[in-house]
Length: 184
Image (cartoon, rainbow, N blue to C red; front, side, top):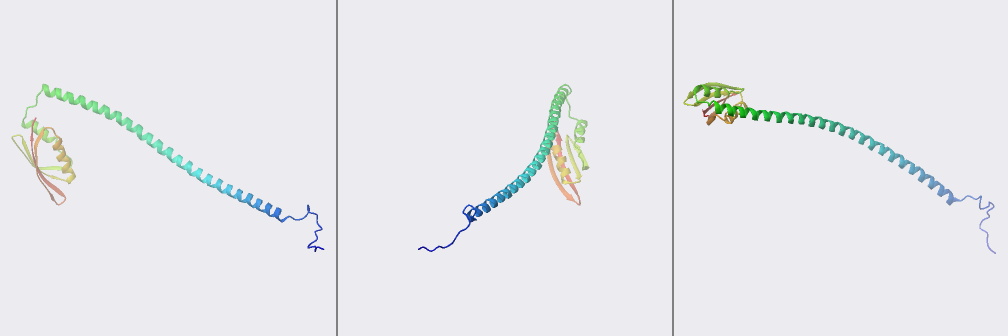
């Protein structure tokens, strides 16, 4: 005879099934976990979307600024072209006038060229003229003022044989001496 281990008075369809209970609990947990993950991903998407909108707004502002600057530059480009054209016309007129009325070297014309060399921050103490040569001793407010003055002399097409003697700093001023000849 066999020994009976247990007596089950509850029919099998009404009996508690632990595996089914555990499966339902795990499925419910996974469903809740999935819902939480979806909500977190939705929040992350909203955050990135807001940042993207902010970036797009900045880009649009930047782009409109660049377009404004570009249109301004185009206006300046047109103005620059007109000024270059006008400068060429004036140079042609100057050359034409020079061909009709030749400039003869004289102390007067040399003085006009000399007076055109004045620069801001330059003060002439002693200036002499001898046979087309100007010799100038002066004072400059700064080394920049002197270099600007000297560049004016170098770029002047009538000034030749430009000679720089010295520049000395005394207190806050710069003493200098230059010599040049005016030729046409």
